[in-house]
Image (cartoon, rainbow, N blue to C red; front, side, top):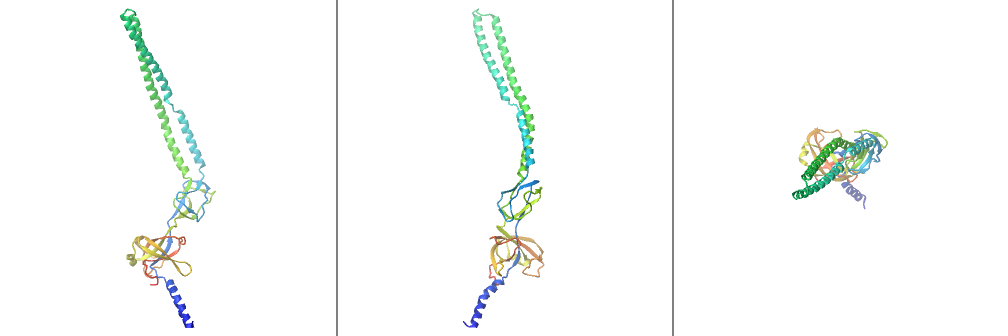
Amino acid sequence: MTKFSAIILVLALAAPSCNRHALKTDASGVFESDEVIVSAEESGQLLSFPIQEGDSLRKGAIIGQIDMSNTILQKQQVEATIRALREKTTDPLPEIELVRKQVAVQQSQLAQQIMERARTQRLLKGDAATQKQLDDQDAGIDQLQKQIAVSRQQIALDQSTIHTENSTISSEHYPLEKSVAQIQDVINKGQIINPIGGTVLTKYALEGEMTAIGKALYKIANLDTITLRAYITGSQLTALKLGQTVEVFIDDGTKKYTEYHGQVSWISDKSEFTPKTIETKEERANLVYAVKIRVKNDGYLKIGMYGEVKFSSDDHSK
């Protein structure tokens, strides 16, 4: 191979690489994500808080515990009061059952007296009994009927009295049960429950420290899908629509670009001044529109990383 041929070959191999480096895009921006700062819902010492920055957490996972021992004691005290009230309530069944048995005996006696009276009436017709015997039996029957009526009234009275007493106790019992439910809700808030699935970005507290309601504990974000916030000029608005698939490029550090597919998820309806950190396609444009492009993250995309966007799939060298 001649020297001239070698030079031609080198230039031919270098040409695609140069075109690759001369990537022309329509917009650029920075990757971001929806970050959630999880704060304490109660005050107390952090008994356990083992998470570390970079940990992947699932939604609903219990990842820490705040000391709620005083609140637990309050709940136990109220529950003891409820048990004491329950012991004060009266079960009406034993007392009422006793009176019912008395009524049963009285009714049996009444039935016997009525049979004896019928027998006496027959004997009286045959002059084998006296009118006084019959009168005495009538008086006995009348007395038993009155006793049965009184016993039945006693049953109704006992039921009413016991019901009133129990209702009074129950009126004290109900608000205490509500107090137990409220205290339990406070106790539940002592558990630190992760609200979303994602990666821990920053940890603000350590196990053993005292925390307070509203104090930030850690920051988490779902990095499975990350958002590129880019800026376009007014003349580029017609080239984009919601849901549109675009190409996103990041510099891989070797003067080459890694390509991703993204989807336009949001287009601002208001213009704003060009951010100082963003270079637009038309450098003279003072006003730009923000757009958000969601990109599936393969693990290499990071929050704060710079990215570029190409609206069409034309050749990158154009």
